[in-house]
Image 1 (cartoon, protein in one colour):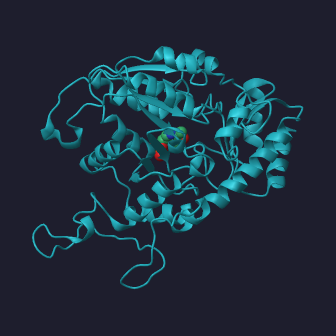
Image 2 (cartoon, rainbow, N blue to C red):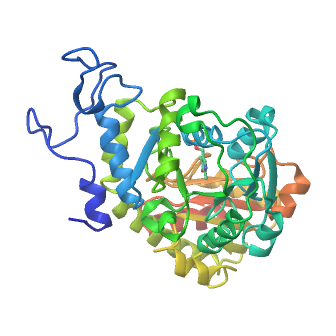
Image 3 (tube, rainbow, N blue to C red):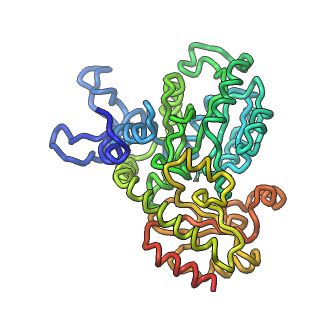
Length: 404
Ligand SMILES: *Cc1c(COP(=O)(O)O)cnc(C)c1O
């Protein structure tokens, strides 16, 4: 029997504990599992890095929420990314959107520099730019939609079509072919499309249904939803990729604790309800601020003024909890506002039940050189809101007060 999203949030991957009937999945605080005879163990449980029952429940839950066959949990979003990059070989080419999460670019540019990966960053709202960036050696296409902090919407199906065009033209893979390497023995020989679905959450869009081969989450954000943990996830319905990724998940071992898995299972039970309220509150605030005299511009995919509003309507179930706002008067005025908010907390990160506000140019995106920031549209007056699920009227009053 297949269920709809809300039912899956609460039940997917979980059933009462067979020994006691406990309705909630226990936190299995164990590193190892007893074997009845050497090499004979229950349901694949031999050692907890490889498999832990609390994590198994979470991974099945995430797979169901993303409409994927396989889910994998990691100790952070960037640990999930690390698992993906270990699939590549020296000289492979990656096309990524120009405003990917800073930590994503840092890992690629610094940690994996020794692999000699080639990268091309393009504005993926323009499919022609993506097509022009492709090479016969392109093995990974990486995008975030909505993007951070400009909330650009990228057409997942259109990008997948480019991946398919180039799959036919892909040249032979770099590096060794060696069956002794197990699932990693063959190089990837086609462009794999990965969508970082952190900003949308599985409630707003399921990229696999739209053509992504792999979905990545920083569960630290909406999936965790309460700003109390750091974790990541991958989901895929591609059997070959699933086998390779699971191999590295175990071989590298950046897995979350059973306690964090339990907290995430508790969080996904309310994901649909939280997301609904995040979206309602954000739309109300975006509409209010777009008529505010101190505001130059509101960027929110749910507003008709957003350049990809039509695509957002087609691709997403609603428009999310993130808003970017350009305050008139640049740095001085936006700083004043950020010092005056009470209900919104001045902090990095996003996706929790409480509202946060931040200044990308000084905080999350400070490592980008000023010229590159300007090119992306990250003005000194730009402020990013992660709208929580408090009372919308109270949130609006707080922003009005801070702007007055
Ligand atoms: C936070 C974030 C990440 C990194 O996740 P961590 O859990 O902090 O490692 C990746 N992508 C996006 C879009 C993010 O917001």
